[in-house]
Length: 575
Ligand code: PBE
Image (cartoon, rainbow, N blue to C red; front, top):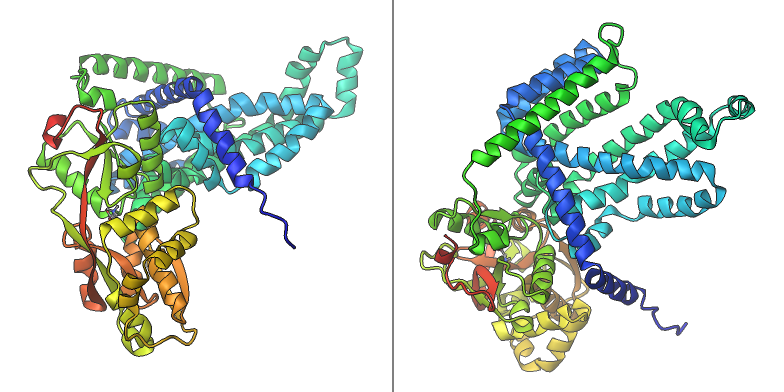
């Protein structure tokens, strides 16, 4: 059939673009509100030394769910602290509590409304179905554009993902209230709100609480996903472990998530009917909790006043002392960390996220002429799209001009000599790569952009394929990381291999797995090793297990990048 593709994606793009601009003020307001709320929760939770919160949580779990679970809580929290995941855990708990709170504030009223009006129910149900089945990753994209990177888009995405059970269960709970009770209430002439608050809600509470409990668990399950857009906490620890293939750290952080899940689950499940209610009244326990929270808030308020402020109106204050980074495993992140130390930028924070989130942030700030500092590298389309500059790096924390190497698995030469030769002869210039990158950034499909460049550069491609034995449909597996540079190079070399008789499969992975995959022979090769500095650690770890075919591009550069309208020139100016 010859029906043209419906540009659904383009329409959504335009819509989101429009919303981003039209509601910019509104989004800033929400961002500030959520950020301050979250800061308050984090401050309250970390008011005293960890042991205080550990004891309080232990007592609370004991009270709601009996002493064996109390003991479990005590030991698991002590273990988390001992392993060094306490701060991350606090951040994770704060994120979950806040998204939980939002689901309650919004979810319960909507659920009630659904129960009271058939039409509302009919409209809301399919929306909920949609929200729950749309992969949660997808929400992260507009979230970044609306709310920037950091915890706010994470909270919003968790909220959307988690709210459904609260709405559904509230609706269900109220509908299941026995008819005769309602009739009795009606017979006594109660108003709708009397009926709701005195009869329906009390009876529906267990069901509603079951919904809230599920929502909290769903919010917790979002923490790893949310770390892709820079939400801090245990999720970020897990993500970091994955991208550096650090099994030990991954296990520790994962285990901490499990502990916190159990604790939050038991508290929220049994809060309504605590195990030891007959020993101490619920009211007393809640009052003590409220007093503690207020006390903690006062304590942190006071210490904050006296603490030395980061403040000032220099570049730090304008950018909130944040440097927008990319994937935690990227070499440039380790270099940026080193820069923070080399230049003694103790106040500054390197925000983890992804390359896509970084360029989205850059675009947003640039369009509003706001100050922003990102980890950037050349060649990159951002330099031809925006007016940007590298900050000078006199201490060479980011290394010097580098090369990109092609690396293949052992044995490829024997198994697919033609592909080996092509990969070995593959070599081009930063300008070439940038052309492909700009094309992709302008919306061309990567494979198409690669084909276009190949067609226009037959001479260069001819040199790569010279003397290579054509393939016989052998499969060649290439890996790459979703950096703009590597999306371009990998697609070009893949097309060339395809045109020479190979069946190329591309897999997008994190940087650690990319090196590990080639080293253990589960994939055939990659064209993305930045050397000698950027990927030094990965290279050192695996260099005996793969074959380095040498440089495919010379002249890359890493560093901190800012728009030209900012009037700083060197990393030293950040002090
Ligand atoms: N980069 C692009 C990568 C290598 C390619 C600079 C973001 C890194 O830092 O690991």
